Amino acid sequence: MVSSTQVELNIFQDLDDLSRQTATRFAGFARDAVRMEGRFTVALSGGSTPQLTYSLLAQEALRSQIPWDAIHIFWGDERCVPLERPDNHFTMTTELLLSKVPIPEGNVRRMRGEAANPHEAAPEYEGSLREFFGLGPTGIPRFDLILLGMGADGHTASLFPGSPGLEERDKLVVAHYVPKVGMNRLTLTYPVLNNARVIMFLAAGNEKAEALKSVLADDTCGPILPARLVKPVEGEVIWMVDRAAARLLDR
Ligand code: 6PG
Image (tube, rainbow, N blue to C red; front, side):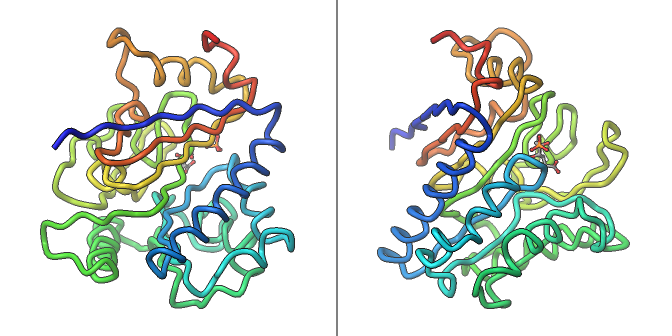
């Protein structure tokens, strides 16, 4: 079978515009998946860039267009910090989105970033993915949508340059310590990211420009940044970026 990854690049004026379009497309993907499959499975990202998108999804214009009882929420990664911390992805998303929409509690599956031992929380999350998607020990979930961000160093989810989890080909979820941020992280691995139907990357701001140029480059020169290895085998990558992040791209 020939596999290919389609890449779509969208450049917006600013984060506002980017967020509106992302939220609108999210709602469209959700409606289409529910119409065709009866449910929509999505892994969310953390960080600052998606926050406005989450707030917009909770506002009336979009909120009532999304069949929340058929939406199943997961995360692409989690910071290993107490649940009370605002930078915990689940906590941030709950505050901006999940507490404001009629999604059944049982449809939200979070990574236990607050666990005393992240190496136990990773297989636990893998277990909940296998159960939800009805997978055997070697199956890989196929998300309808995975939202990802990208750091200025090209990391995505919590796959940082040099992270041991970059090499993982069997486990669906790993925990590793990230010296750069001085904390443990839980993250989905490439086998899961690269089995998605759609990956939507959000990147905004000047500091993302170098990494974006490198990740989108056709040539094989330069470092292979983690975000560049996100290439779903039978899926699509959609970049939603602002002009500042796109400033070094040849157009
Ligand atoms: C995190 C993320 C990470 C994030 C990028 C971009 O924990 O921070 O999961 O992959 O998406 O670092 O973050 P910003 O959106 O804050 O720039």
